[in-house]
Image 1 (cartoon, protein in one colour):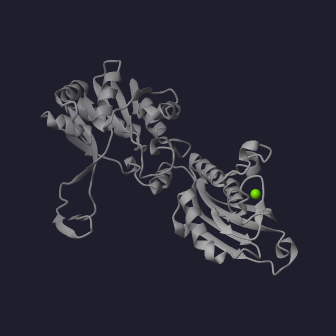
Image 2 (cartoon, rainbow, N blue to C red):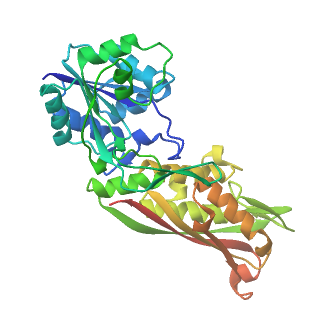
Length: 381
Ligand code: MG
């Protein structure tokens, strides 16, 4: 049967975090949505429409490598599917509707869905049984009741439909209706739907750690890389120093082209080192006037974004500040909090500590201060 596919990619993915929505993040060498597009093409889809948020059209176009038609989505998933249906140009007998955040799609499952329709079903979805005990609870975590799990199924996508059945169901649905999936739409129109065995690797990316789990399932190798960064700045006139984003009153200031935050400069270099991305000077040349007096938060955000774009996860950072004065101890926790905030990682994965050089050398003479940082990063091999 001739089939077309609609991939719903409208979500903004707040729970996964980061600046790139989850469906466009790299996963084992290609964007999340790219996995589904390639699987559908390889299985013989005559036409693929990807429905995305209008502001992500370029991201979506790049991630689907010209293999899908890009269409603006609506305010709800149901509205987005409607937009996808309207954009289909051919006259397919079968329409598959798939969530972009489920990259573990393969030809075998697509074949099973289309096969079920060929055997007479009008609507079919992959589903998995629920292995865990189920209980209903309130927002405070108090158990309200036990829920029998017999017969309960977790419904996945793609969901496959006879095109006439799907179009009729959407035609009968009120324009502002919002359903969580398309089986619900056809059932609301009195259509009987069938379930076939789903696939664990069709899990939906919901939380940040899901990307690494799927990467292992889909065969991508990940490695742990440790980067190292060192920086020093000279003391000069001033009334405060900025270290790890925290302003500390001091009898001297730090001299530098930017805000001279040696702690974050060394941290940026450590992250760049783990990514194999050169050094801070290559990304923010001191000769460029736009970085004069710059807040180093910009540099650190840039490093975090590079890591995200590379599909990497910053596992842990360890900052050591070397100076006689100012005393770091009273500001240590504030530095950890600021660093964790900017990197978007838990506080438990940020260490800030300090030492002196027992009055030896340029640090001992208080000509300046220095920082040394290691960053541990998990990333695609
Ligand atoms: Mg520096």
